[in-house]
Amino acid sequence: MSKEIIIMIIGMGIVTFIPRMLPFIMFRGKELPPFLQGVLKNVPYATLGALIFPAVLYIQEDIWYGVIGALAAFAVAFLGANVIVVVMGSIAVLSAYSLFF
Image 1: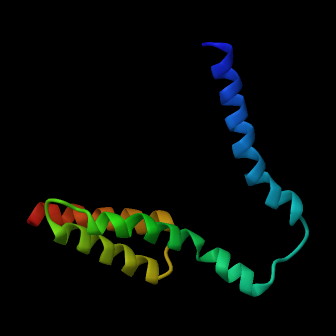
Image 2: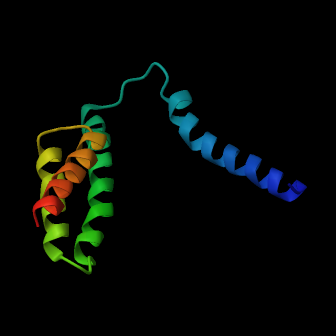
């Protein structure tokens, strides 16, 4: 490996590490207001929606595949499941759908 690549990898590691550690350092021993906690609690679901929705609109083969996957993800997220459970639930529903149709 060349020296530039090693420096680039180290730089990317630092740039990734700093934003993840800053909140832990800045908010150590402090409690966030309830409104802000509620907003931050919904960020993973908003991100998941932003990732899923364009894929539903641009699916080429079977539009129902995208619609059913989005509805399954929405239903599981509405029940308050973890983001990983939402993704896995949607995959399970789409796997069952692909077996029967």
